[in-house]
Amino acid sequence: MMRALGYHRLISMENFRSPNFPLVAEILIWLVKRYEPQMEIPFEVETESDRVFFVKAVAQFMATKAHVKLNLKRLYQADGYAVKEMLKITSILYNATKTKENADGDHKSDENNKFKFDLGSKISDLKLARQLGSEITAKGAALFDLLGQEEDLRESRTTAIGRPLEITETERALKAAIKDVMENIQKTKDLLNNVSSDEASLEAKIEKKKQELERNQKRLQTLQSVRPAFMDEYEKIEEDLEKHYEAYVEKFRNLSFLEQQLDDFHRVEQERFEEAEMAMKIRQNKLKEEEKRLMRSG
Image (cartoon, rainbow, N blue to C red; front, top):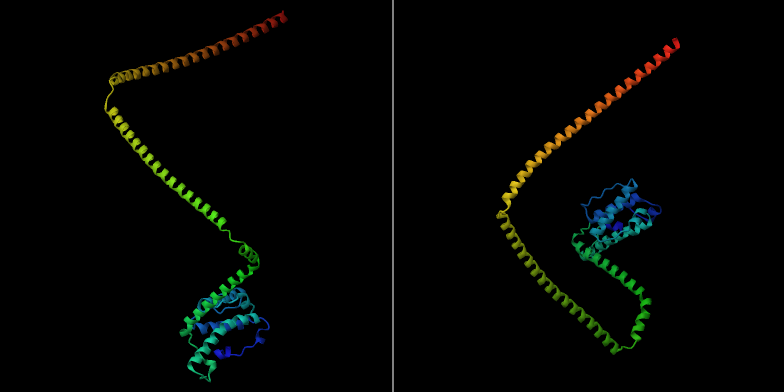
């Protein structure tokens, strides 16, 4: 298929007996260019991180442009599994090429290796086909999961089908359900009515408080504008009290000063008394020593 698409060299499975990442990268770049000639993907595969980035870039491009989901791990292995992943891209290009050739007739060119296929006219049909294929796959997987539950559900379904339909019991259950619904509706209506009455009551209380506030404000303004009859006497007594307080403070200061002076005087007198007493004791001791000396000499 690669030769039919115009790839410039022969490829066989022998090239992928062992991991051959450079060849895989070269083929992927060529296939990407077949889809989008202007697409630029960095061809740097020297290090592990470069290879991972390269594989992710190619996979993202193919998923976006051709709706082809590639297995990154298999591509990175660069062996026979990588060939299977690349066949997904190659098959689409090859089928598109064959479709174009059938539409144009059975004419074949001698220069197949230089053939360039314009995918622009078929890209919308290709996207639609890939989208439908993805949807079919997803729905098939969901159907498979549901069928896997068949064994568990078969017994319950058989039991339900085999059980006779009791109209009386069903009617009783429906009436009970209807009754519960009606009770809930009535409770909701009662709550709404209570809310309305509570709202009216609150509005009445708020209005009453507003009126009381207005009356109190008017009363306060009236009291502030009227001077009490005893205010003159109060101010006079207040002035007298200030004078008496000043006199009291002055006398208290004088008393404190005199008490301090008295304490200082007593302290000085005590010191003088102690000094005189000490001097007297010294003189007495001297006299006693003098008497003893005279008695020894006589």
